[in-house]
Image (cartoon, rainbow, N blue to C red):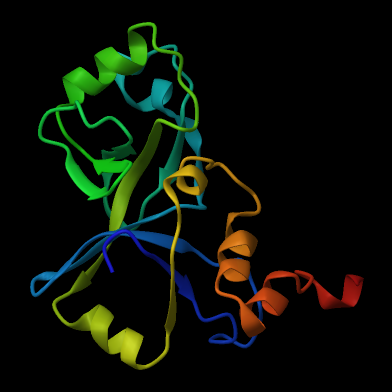
Length: 179
């Protein structure tokens, strides 16, 4: 499940809605960690990190845990101590090297970095139980699509990628009355 996305079952709360998409970075006997990909904050990295002053990169609400901490995913294998989640997506690493990378003339684009305030966590066994209860759908995301955030169509693209009935749900209007 590491490197997969979790999509809330659309009819779980009685309607279809573009709910949160979680990118999973950890899942073991101790618990699970993921980041919400589709909930941007009103702040940018310039607002939150002194070393990134003047650099206006989007920051996403990664989840309710430790929202005062900035987490980051990137595609730079050369950042020391970064954990490879899947080929092309790394979590964390030497933040001073990453900030030098970002601020040091390498032009930022969405194919390189994603910043999150906080993360989403599940206790040991909790996510497995929720998966057994069909509370979540598990999908894949390519590094190319991952680094296209912000992407207003990410939920729809993720649902379509599941195929079958999910493709129909992805194209369902957000407000059926307005159809």
